Image (cartoon, rainbow, N blue to C red; front, side, top):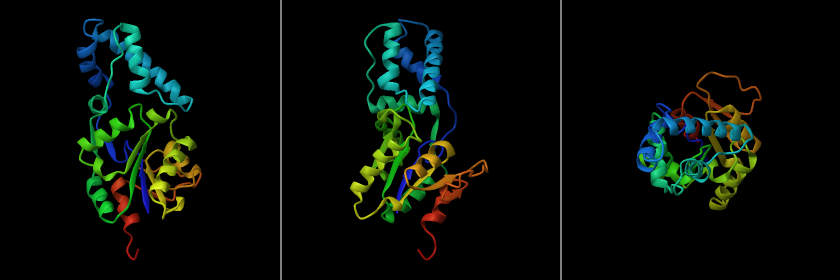
Length: 236
């Protein structure tokens, strides 16, 4: 078995979402002398509309590559350069991220069992920032690779996004096949449909008791920690 996880609301829960919590220290450091915080907040709302438009077209609107240059264009000065650590700090301030209940124990048991694990996420933040965030929450060491739509340019359920990850996974695990990969995610439209289209088994975290209208989910669970009953079945 190989596990490929969605990130948000699968491995990590968001306790709140507030972009301005990250924007405030960013403004204080780079733009305090160029605009008011209310100005940059309003512009951030305009850029969020661009993000939504991009997502509606199946594309990602990358924070560092696409959004940061627009602040410089609007308010002047050099484009702010962010490394993965700084980007992760911004991301975590905005989202109040915490590991999903029981996930650290599950990942540790999977590692002990020799199960390779990966992350494929829709995010405007780079894979480096996502992995750094996972490290800061104490679970980054369990993953062989992390992929983000910010780097790929397209979002799940785009099949090419999945395939780019599957190609790497199968090269790193030549003794296993596509049929051995189990994708774990909470969003039907992106996780279940996308993984199924890529020919993967899917464990759907169906918290709302929704209907699997297309019958694409291989398994349905209530929380990520319930994956344990699938991975470590008695007699397997």
